[in-house]
Length: 451
Image 1 (tube, rainbow, N blue to C red):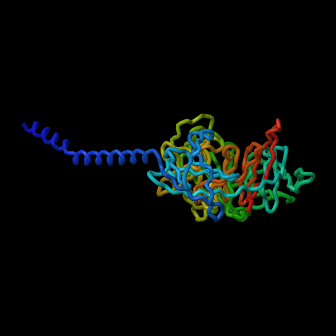
Image 2: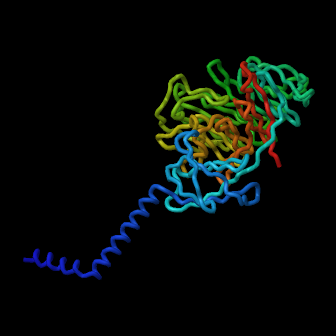
Image 3: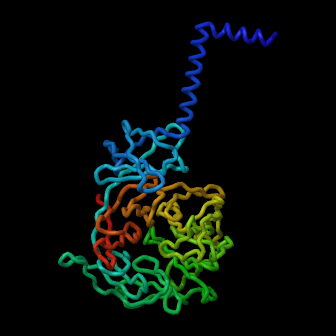
């Protein structure tokens, strides 16, 4: 009986045209609301503010959506620098004339609903060739630019300008020998010298090599000694001599025999057969990442590899920060995500940290007792940091803006393939070979901001 009354009441309600209109409005409102929620779940409306230097950039650049690979890009069309972008996009790419820039989502995906981002288009630097047709590595020292043999450093050559359009060099300074990568320091380099029981300070043009002994018991034949200097500030006299295998290091406030080094101890229990250990010195902060390499185990730049195995499943790691200015330096640890990994750590003069994970370049943020990362660019070939972070993407060099979290094109040479970039203080040097050279002999370019 009750069932029949309910059906009858429903029929009467639906037969009323006013109720039909009310239901239609409710249905339309629900449909529109659910459509908007669904749309915002997949897309973000992004408003972009462009700057170049300190001034706003009024023109709207061509805008592309990057996803999965550098080749997979789709042109976007916007109104008044406002774009509808899939939240899963790897990055946005902007181009206007010779200016290019990247912007990536800060937390792995663009925000929910609406988001405003700032993008600096920057200015392209100018390049001067300082060396050609060789296998020499560049170094800035004092007020000059020098080079040394990349494989077995033993002498300097100083760049003396050009003659008939070609770089000219003169030999400079005393000879030296080392089997380990040199570290840029003040007006020269620091190396593990001779039999390996001393650290040597080699200055181009000097008549002799200055040395200080390594601490007693610090060295044995199984150790891999690395020297870390502050590449962000050539005036910083401090440096760290660090044993990669044991995790024992010594900090020197200056290169003087009278200086007593401070001992540094790694807290992380490193497995040298599979773990990565990568460090950087900025001011009096010595920072190391220890743990899992990235998705593929590669050796980047001048730090030792993580062993012979390929580790395709990252298992997390720890960042240790040591203030070497205090009497007894102790490490403060920050734990990373269990499924993360880093191959190589970098830092700029402001102390901002970055990590290389195969081709992924990430910005690192330290929070409480953990660290988190956000993407800078997903397809990076080479990276180096000093005053700024520089990286090579698609054979072009970009400079990262820490304030806007965007990257702008800084240098490109369509006739050369870049193999390495070296940032030291305000200087940026690029090593590359000509596409026309079957021997792929290296050329070195000094890149300067075009102010």
